[in-house]
Image (cartoon, rainbow, N blue to C red; front, side, top):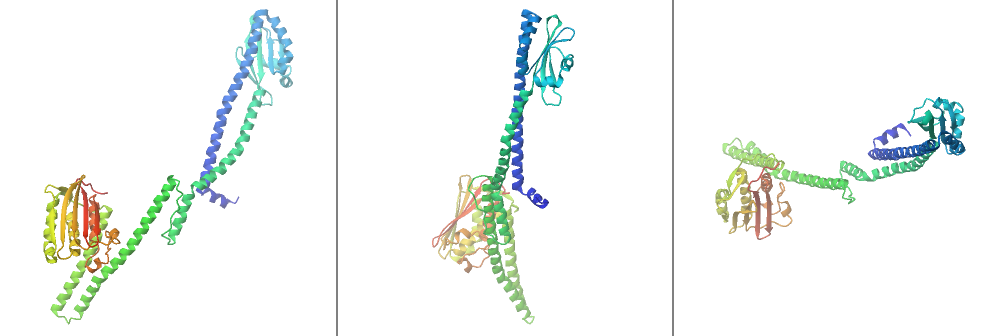
Length: 471
């Protein structure tokens, strides 16, 4: 495999996950093998030693009952059987001279006559392990001192035990090799399937990079973390698309609304330039330019206020505000406009109703709502401002008997610079309701509107009595 391909594979998350799956699987298998192998080895060894001890105790009891000669006779009678069964039996006199030696056939070929001499220095009443020359097996031998100074040694080779363990290892390896291959293939498949949403995300991001803002990641409806990530990513894309659409519309509206004052500014400048330096004409042109400049500055300041409120950086100077007094104060400011338009304005509510709020910002909110109602309420109509306490909130209602809001415009009336067809006939910036919503949100409150075309509108403000700052 080329080196470049290997490097590319090592950078692939799916390949690395599959490799980790395989390594964990192999490590777990080896751990399982160790957990089975070593207890099995210890159990077989213990069994062999139990058999050896049983043989030792048998000869010891015979020596105690009938004497050393009877024991030797019994050993000679069983010599062939012991040899074939893999037993090592040795009896030595007090001087260490071997009286009888029984060896397994394969061990006799290794040591021959030198075998007893080799064991003559072995410990008494303890186990001796004698390894085979050039082989992996060994003799497990135990010695015991008998009456009269005689030494009895019984042992057994580990060849059978090792064959069992080798067979166990071969069987385990025969099972594990295909399982490891299956684990790697299965791990790669699972990693590939698990990372499919991530690949879909990458594909969608690439599509967005070339301008396809309507691209979405397909959901597998699995309910897992990756599916939740896909859902959140799609929601984020939808909000971004909505934001970009709103920005485009806002820029179009800004361009449209700025065109008029800028055109008037230009017209005023041109008038001043063509006036022949007549003082009255120059003064009138400058006043027009100042008015249009103020209109532009107002628009930009309002946009900045909305942005500050929506991002949570608007500074609010909170203090207890008497809601009824605030409503009455705003109504007094607009009383002249209301009388001029032939609209009756009233205020109602309990006198002890207070809320922690920025009084200047709340005056701006109520003023914008009242101004909006006055613009759309015909002669002879009425506007009612009321307040009440409801479920831990202060609820303020601004209800008019105006033209109402068309259902198509209702969801968008709080968007920046949005003005419905009916509103286009009125001079304004299209920012009043956007600022109202932003300031209410900064006070941790909410605003909603109920409207029926031809029957008026009702704006409902809800403010917590102990409203915290919105982060």
